[in-house]
Image (cartoon, rainbow, N blue to C red; front, side, top):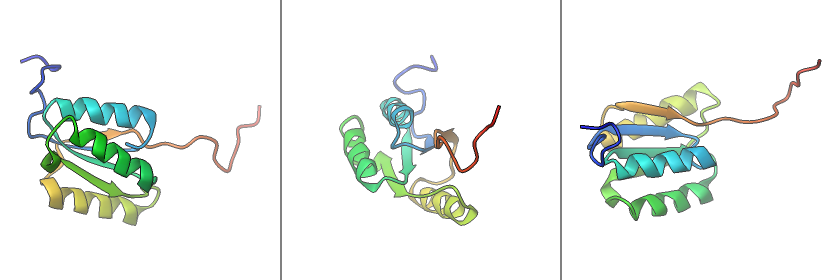
Length: 109
């Protein structure tokens, strides 16, 4: 079976951080189309709900789980993992698309 087949990720549980961003949301759509159970997360509740609805249009509702989470701290990461495993069992794949630009420190050249 090709890694790009429609069933390549059938019933695998894939957790996607930063799913509300451009790369994360497109990755979530592709993975959902490949048959995976997908847990999406991000800090923007409005975009998270919108993405969940979009994903439910490409797969069944019971394969999509959305969790608003901030993975900048350990407790946020632990809660995310606990809630995602409660929904779909052990995570079999991770797409870490969360990121920020800028930050408090800047590089001085």
